[in-house]
Length: 276
Image 1 (tube, helix red, strand yellow):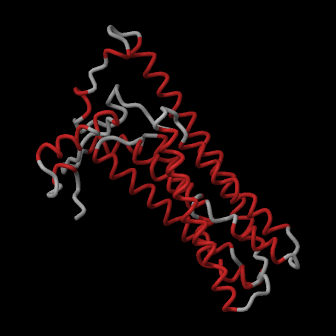
Image 2 (cartoon, rainbow, N blue to C red):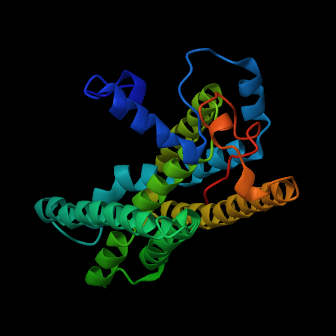
Image 3 (cartoon, one colour):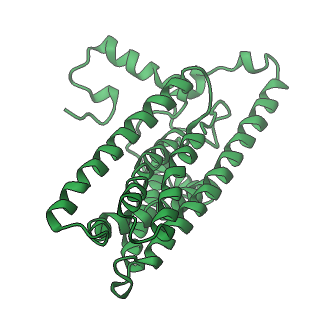
């Protein structure tokens, strides 16, 4: 039902498998290899973007660790009953689902036009969260409707994290390096979710000022890291374009087939281009 790669997909014919594998040609991310390659492990830990992915995993999930554990308490602090508090979580879940769907759809739409928009959409979907967190901190306690709206505004960060996951997948090549990079990102994800609840002090209920500030600071750091990552990836693409443009045949003369299906890392493969 869930094959490891197109090659092992039982429901595909040989021709369909070839077509599925050929789709990886443009991405230049290679195909799966079962062999652990030490040099790819070393490259992963010497690649600056891996540490940026770890930071994104951490700061992107400190708010998640708090909201997922204390969201109902925050709403109940507005003065609602337990039943109403539970019902009020339904729109929040709907907002999360719609945010993810709209973010993925819009990014795919612009990507088909050749635009690099993933980082911009991360930032776009962080804006409501930052505004909502500031609202939770500064909107008066008696303005229950306003504070509830601010709480709902903290939902779209889930879409931003989905885009971060896609950035990690699209910008890492080499099977061993992918495994290490995904592990580092997941470590950041766990770190953020573990740390998040500790900012919500019982003595500060129902406002949880420290917890709300942790959301604000985390998202602002996330904005900085995303911009740094976009700059890093864009600069590397321009450098590679310049090098290959100066060679015989230029960019149009690149042999994509020669590098598309080897287990090469993104640093090894001169035809690899980062998506940001």
